[in-house]
Amino acid sequence: MMRLAILLGSLVLALFMGTLLIGPADISPVQSLHALILGEDGPMTLVMREIRLPRAILGLLIGASLGLAGAAMQGYLRNPLADPGLIGVSGSAALGAVLSIQTGLAAAIALALPMMALGGALIGVLLVLLLAGPRGSSLTLILAGIAISAFAGALTSLVLNLSPNPYAASEIVFWMMGSLADRSMVHVWIALPLIVAGGLLLASLPRGLDALTLGEDAAEAMGINLTRLRLSLVIGTAAVVGASTAVAGAIGFVGLVVPHLLRPLVGARPGALLWASALGGAAMILASDIFVRVVLPERDLKLGVVTALVGAPLFLHLIYRTRRDGV
Amino acid sequence: MNVLSLQDFGVKRGRRQILGGITLDIAAGEVVGLIGPNGAGKTTLMRAALGLIPSQGRSSIAAMTARDRGRAAAWMPQSREIAWPVDVEILIRLGRTPHLARGQKMTATDQAAVERAIVRMGLEPFRHRTTTRLSGGEQARVLIARSLAQEAPLLMADEPTAGLDPAHQIATMQTFGQLAAEGRSVLVSLHDLGLAARHCTRLVILHDGGIAADGAPRDVLTPDLIRAAFGISAYLKETPEGLIFQPLEVLT
Image (tube, rainbow over all chains, first blue to last red; front, side, top):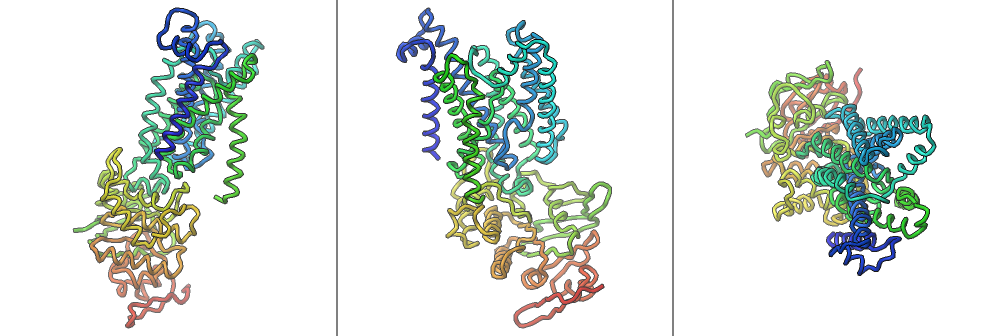
């Protein structure tokens, strides 16, 4: 367990340094760090502090968010196919963002896009909680989430459908693919408080999730408050995923694949999987973000496209392995 | 001192009164068999007594805080759920959940309780096997060990012997007997009346939404009560090997 923590931790650290030091601006690593830390006036400091640092921090935060939320969701639903998007937060955040692009607010007001995306996520999660009720089973939560996701998806399509302006439409489509390009420290400050607060809520779950291995009845009889656990899960997931989607768009497959990949390495314990998946998610996003900048840097390859391209085959392999093991 | 006390206890589902007027006290050192036909409400009674579903009347355990309940009674549901492929020892350690404060690690006391549960169920050779790859009977024993590790004064088990071979059925009931001999108590729902007759110190028949009989096995398994509750005839005899009960025919 300790070895895994050290391994994942150093991987994340290495990739974080990698995203800081790799980029189109031709600066040597020593120069980069020098400019970042000591910060003389000049273009190098600007590049490091205003472009690469926020990008690296966001990659770290968003990857950790998606991995953590995915592991928590799978643990709660006791289903390896669960995904943080399941409760409709990413769909409704995307709808908020799309509306801000479509109405031109995103172009007129600097932070309209992430703010409207956050608003969408908030409305989405409130609707899900309202639909699922405070004490319902995990099934009602899934159904409410699917309903909200489908509805948000339909409205997003409607906006695209009615879009009179092809530029807005293409902007929407590209935004929805997810990216960390051209984000500033302001985006970090928007996402950071929500991700920290949501992350703390999710970090309170391990014992309850472990107990849920035995089913809801047994867990509740062992003193686990399922109502509180569910509320922490939904609000925590909404905060971290809502904030992530608001600043980076929809990035898929991380929350699904990372927990699945790391599960055997933590002895399948859902509680221990939380921190492992947070580190694993951060590693996957940081690596993908390095990839989009190294391969085809001039074509602006989108992060969400890469995670899906990597994630889907990985997932197929996992399904194959699961089938072979017969569990 | 009673480990469970139900007074004028009842359960409603919607507007339908499923159970009502139930008064039941379980003292230390008893193995109480809860018997009754399908749908009599055995599981409902146990879940309501634990406070897992809403109820009327008084249950000494449902009245406790969630944390205290986990220390007062261990619950073994009938559905043998193991959601993740964790290994046997890790699963059994989950039984210590109610004894740990928020964020607290397992202490030597907790580990000792886990060891006792593993030894008692004879699971030493399975310690590091993956639970989801065990046979159904082995999983059942692991789950019993999990509830034993909880070391609560009362163990409530819903059909713990279902799907076990005769040797493991008997061994399970003997384990319950040992617990009672050590001063703990067991409330166990059973369909196998022969097993109930031999291994329980006391039987409670649940029928028509209430307790139809409550007493020593030989007083409860009478032809009249068995016919009324189960609609069967049966053979009951006190022998040198103990009480023998064998269901015979369905009566119409």
